[in-house]
Length: 231
Image 1 (cartoon, helix red, strand yellow):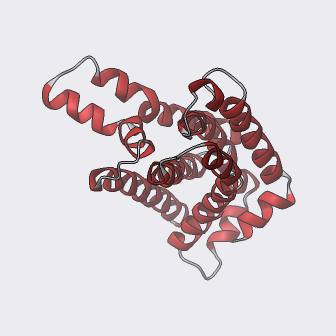
Image 2: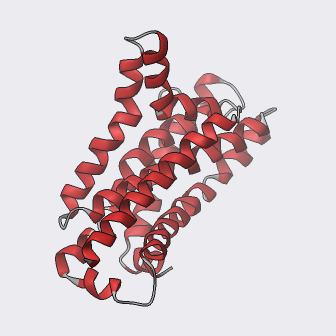
Image 3: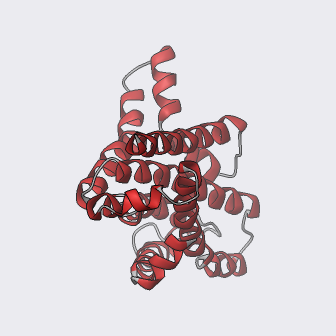
């Protein structure tokens, strides 16, 4: 978990946690469609803002994981250590995912507060949190891959956003313009289709397969890219 320690040593973790809690807290409790506005014991406001906040924050966390080592040349040293490429990739992936998990853990007071205000759907809350973790894992896998193909952190960040925006917005927009198999396929490729379902409290096997498949694909592609650097 060297990367997790690096996050905290460089203050990145603290900045991310404060910014995430600040954004999510402001829009959950104070602005627009906040909890007091909708007058329901629900965390839907939080899940909606976290959906977008994490989309922009995660590439900022992953952009340096490999790009900085590619730029400085330390990637060759890393690859000579007695660990497999898969272990290197999974180690960086888990370190970032743990940081996201910590961020979400710090929002549990939101749940406790809302639960004290009225009857809350506990199943929907935990399903929503699971959706956030799985969505975050997908974007971490994408971010790690884009970081592995570049030696520039900004390029890595923008590339991760470019790929992510297809899953976040474009596939959903295209799906609304098509019907039949094409429309269903595009809708299935959209993260919002699966995340929204889980945020409402519905956990379907097709949603789990979708998220896990994207995560695995991102990690495999990163491992393959590292393998090329060994040759």
